[in-house]
Image 1 (cartoon, rainbow, N blue to C red):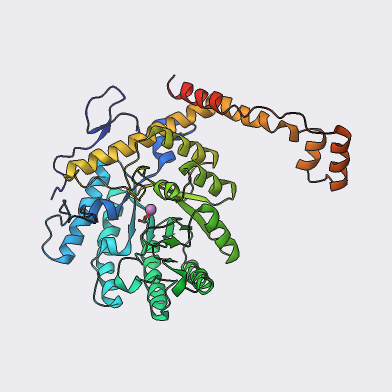
Image 2 (cartoon, rainbow, N blue to C red):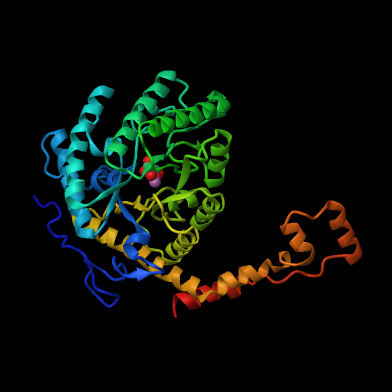
Length: 437
Ligand code: XUL
Ligand code: CO
């Protein structure tokens, strides 16, 4: 059965193409900076938004039917799998990501949930082999069910902690079975609404223990990929413990998790935290924690997690600059944690959205490569810090300067001469000049 009848196999037709079902910038096999675009970008399809989200919002029910013609719960989920692989094929997407509860119906008990998962995982394993698709990462949905209303690892109820641990154990097993190169922890309800009812210290310690316990279990059964924490400051919880990249890095250090964990940085989460996407990526990179990306964009006027497909080329360029500077992805990739707008309800809209996001990132990669090749921005930064290459600066850089020496140096000089201009506007104009040349 064909589920996306009006979606053809989407091909690269070049920038002058007027065909909306074609790529204009994403040319999978084209080489840029030593790798094909396919290898650089490692696009992944998010199962939850693509196969599950039906367009509900706070004020209205779904506008899209994602049952894919299935009559029983199990048939619905089998058809979701067939539809997923058809779409990945048509869009040249090599990877996908899922939560346990996206791919199989929830049962009455954990045993029933696990049995349902096994049925679908069998089916998926076959489809992956047949179509040559790979699992970028798996995760457990520990935020939807009412039992998680007060958190999962940070719940005040020990039974909920135990349930979460058991659920994550199974999700890691499934991820390993499907050859996943990553496993994500996103703590949607790991936080608090009010300190009047919360023991923050206990909750953080419990969360650290849950991550240690489950990640070590994964290693013990052969998981070789990366674990990622996905920072987000709020939504659904008022104050989430994984607020932003810097907060998460501190948490990983405190609970001795830095060896196993990296970050999955999401654009819309960055802006919710009051940062730019580029800032969050840079924090991850300079701390050796750059791992994977949830590609999307928010709406700065709305200010919530709108999960839109990324089409802002300035943002994708700045993102790809960070990716290239980090040396590219190893186990990670670009997962479109993005959904069509509620009014973009047809199956074709899903294809148009992915094409827009993939072309948006293909342009970002092309532009980032141009900026690096142009070299003026990097040269400026290099020159800006050149005082650390000689004299007293060199001693500071080599950490051999003493406090007395620094004092004597400045006493002899009297004061610091005016430092050089930061030249922000000049640099922003170079950025534009390179992009639009
Ligand atoms: C929620 C979000 C999640 C994670 C995986 O904002 O981004 O879908 O990516 O749980
Ligand atoms: Co995400």
